[in-house]
Image (cartoon, rainbow over all chains, first blue to last red; front, side, top):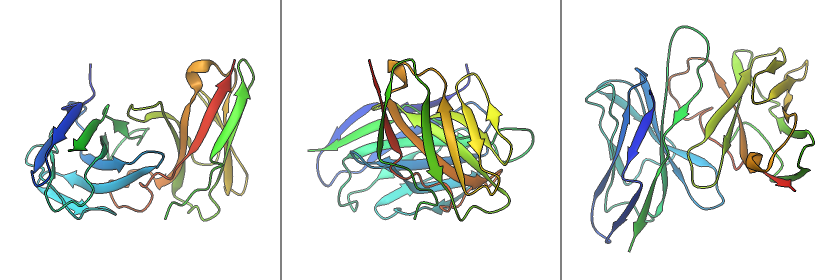
Amino acid sequence: DGGITQSPKYLFRKEGQNVTLSCEQNLNHDAMYWYRQDPGQGLRLIYYSQIVNDFQKGDIAEGYSVSREKKESFPLTVTSAQKNPTAFYLCASTRTSGGAGGELFFGEGSRLTVL
Amino acid sequence: DAKTTQPPSMDCAEGRAANLPCNHSTISGNEYVYWYRQIHSQGPQYIIHGLKNNETNEMASLIITEDRKSSTLILPHATLRDTAVYYCIVRALWSGGGADGLTFGKGTHLIIQP
């Protein structure tokens, strides 16, 4: 079945370490997004990409980096520069042309805890 | 800032209709209203979207006022599994990116009471 797969589901890291969260989709979607969610809060946009080899900063990009070398993949690196990295991270994708819909499809999320 | 306003929480009795309001007074002519819901610790799930006409699918109905400044999501026969946070967002169809319109506010925490 088509969908978005995020891994790992749970991740622990020590302060000062970089960590990369994986996001893969087989929906043939052009646009992909990374969100961060803190307890009791809404979703805040970190980075987004509308096409391969191109991406833009969202509202809270500081301390994060991304790449989009393949249409299917949009990994997020949480760097040591991110002051409060402990959070729930969500990846999403959507089509950008043709037909009905336009809805975002989300992965199941990755929960990062910094020890 | 989020372009929508929703009550932080609502209760509804099981089996009754749950009506979730959303204000979007600054909505543009090319922006659609989308609803999602998020069950605890899962990714949000798309429910329904609409432009100006009322919409219905197997999950819910969407009622949009004539001036498009507000809308209501209706779950016709709420069950305990409908307990979740419901998000209302507005965005232009095929707007592939941009922080504007793709930021989710805190949503409405709907609690279905047995």
